[in-house]
Length: 238
Image (cartoon, rainbow, N blue to C red; front, side, top):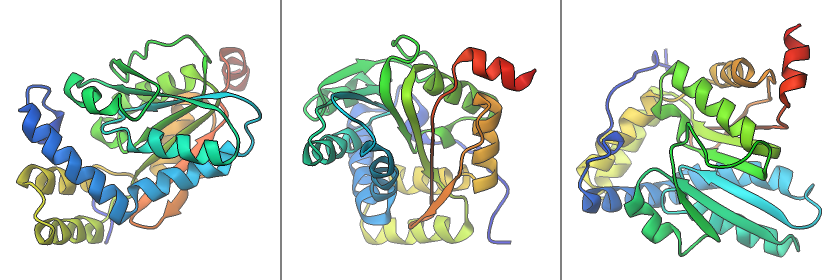
């Protein structure tokens, strides 16, 4: 009863032609929301679970990086562990990358469905709160692309669908005076989210790996897995 059917809806920020000023204002609200309501904490908790296994210099790719708050935090964590980390932020919106480039080693303007990297060329590939924007077919395509690029691990962090989360976000967003675009898109985002079973099945369909999905505070879901190469996927399907 507390988990509605997945709702597609339309988010204003999905429109590539949205006013850059409105996009920047709304994404600043989103970054604040992630800090206060668990989005950043969930993604970083999953990263902490794997980064200590990295020995030596590594590369980190954040797909749909937005304001690049995740790679900036990842770099600080890696530095504390003595791991030199090259961070790369990818986003489809050039206006976002103007700000993001101050927080990462490199930026790239590209589609998440066609990442400009060779197979298994990046150690850690992160995708946080992007997957829910797409339908099932697109989501499978996106996860396959993450899996293709990753050498050591893929990390997903996204929203857990719930009426409580949707209503709670709306009330908090009004109280915090978030932009109306943020308020609208935030509720739609929650209703586009996943259950843990749905997310595990999606990854399994895309990659041949069915990972453990964790519930995190703030109605978040996280998971990670080691990517299979094509030969291993083919053997599993045989």
